[in-house]
Length: 341
Image (cartoon, rainbow, N blue to C red):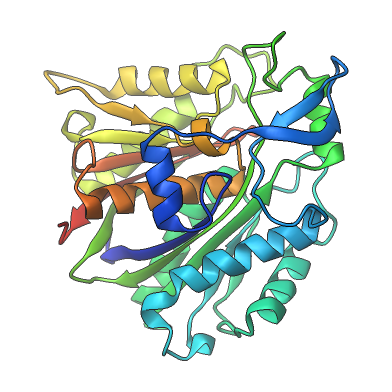
């Protein structure tokens, strides 16, 4: 990348931890905390999901804002004394085609977040990125442009998302996509908020070496044969940007949620790109602990990568992070640890 982009701090709100250290420790230990919801599934039983343990009446828009506020304040801790109006906010939310998406989500979350936290983000450089799981990686590319142009010293990337709404679960239930005793090829819904603070350069953190994006023609809802062309292009471009081959990657973090399609997509893409002798590449998928949290799941992966590098338990270096949406959008990023303990 033309700009040396470093992730220097994160904040998380998940079902297994209400801060980044707690959540990452639980994910490392492969803990999970699915609980019964008030929603009834097709089998007549209550649906289980990875719910962030806040007040029961906080649902929908209010919960998204509450989770986001806590994640933002945690991520901004290293620059707490700075003028927050100088920090652009890149707000990542569910894609417009998401079933059950809240009306006017972008503006209501942005204004609600400022009201809750008392912060006022950069007026001209802050923007919305409603692109689902690929959104946070698109935001990284936007952050590089902002930092390279000298518009700010730091950029905050925030994702807040939840699949725990009646209309959303009704659609996914009708499509037989939810995990239950009668369906092993499904996912468990979740919710989370995550924020990452990025800067240009830096002595510590997680440096982004390359980004890549692609579009899969055989997306989730089509009947076309899956060749993983979109993910292959995304990973190939990220590796080329970083000046690396896939065989040089230490390990991978992904947004796989338990459905077979996503495992097949990533496996096909890696098999098409992997050449020559290589070491074992572990595959981490935080959704097994926090559920499918939509756009926030990618930021959970970023936080896990940063914490693993800082704590010295990463399964290698550099790390490849991948994300993909139901509409076929794919993204990949390569990171290396800087100043790890």
